[in-house]
Length: 498
Image 1 (cartoon, rainbow, N blue to C red):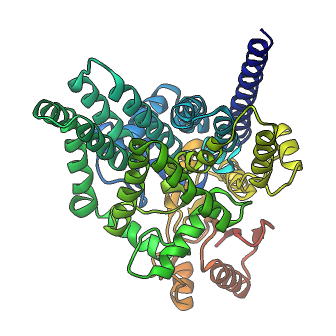
Image 2 (image 1 turned 180 degrees about the vertical axis):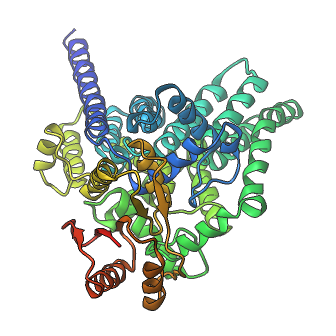
Image 3 (image 1 turned 60 degrees about the horizontal axis):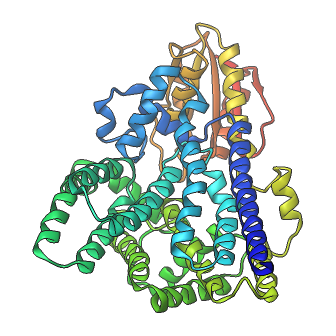
């Protein structure tokens, strides 16, 4: 009787901790969703594609060098046409996806891990991870990628054990999910392969072919976009190659190791890289020794993701592989399966590992409770919104806005603040990646219509100092009064009448 009461007490404690961690994850995501009511630069570019396109246009090449799964865009397009232009509307799908992911990850963890300590540790890492919280409030598909990857894992668990299987229905669902998330391309093939190997016969082969037909059609559509119909792919490859962290693996081993290291430290910014790698590798070993199917499933998803990176189909970099983060958390947590709840030392080890992932900074938990975590949401994007609000409210009917290579965000905010009919011009000069010719810019300013007021606001450009220097010099030299605002080193604002 005493042992039974002890087990009941432990189960109640376990459920209470589970509830507390889920609540913590949801509250953190909700706080950042409701407290950040503005879009970022990439978000605004994606939003403009929804604002300016019809339903079928979302299935074609996107503007502003954007890539996003069509059904993710369609679902937001529907919300936009019901509720109008709204940051909450654009960010609603990522937020809901992130909240649902917390519940679903708990169910996945219970299926993949063997004891309650490892489940609690995995849920803790998932609930407080700053990147998962960040993308819960950003208008990008990465939170829904996480949710759909988890759905596919859950699909594998229930489908593999189900006595009766409706292959046609599940195939249709998979096809829809593939249109909603690119990572389905790396998860579903491994699931099909494992289902086939677990019950290899002619009937299973035919049924799995039926299951895979919608997925194959969607895959062909994506491959056509990536290598032919969609020129955006080459632009994105160029961009990825020229940023600090390249998302494409190559023959350069040192570069590949750096890519892996930067990705791991991006996900777990407080942690030691060598410790994380050791825990991931030992997690793979633990799955190999205890459950080969799950080992092959996780390993296969990683292998396909790397192959897609090598083939330059999909970058293996930070936010684009956020859907792998739950798998990494499961691998790390798998190490705790070897400890027993009956031993007090297990709780000490659990506490040690939890605190190690926040760099032994106990104020981290206080910040989680007070919602003051150092989530990487810069105030600069908020300032961009504020300056556009100022411009739109103070521009007169005949005023002209000078847009210097920020077309998407300019159009978005002018639409947002009801100034879509305002005159917007762009300098007719040649821009390179690093700058432009002074004389060409001066001649363009000279050619602008006189007796008009011009608004110039720019930000984040590599040649921002050039614009500032040349504009100031031209206006000063020609005795043209102008207004500026002190916005910080990443901004440039001028108002002048020629």
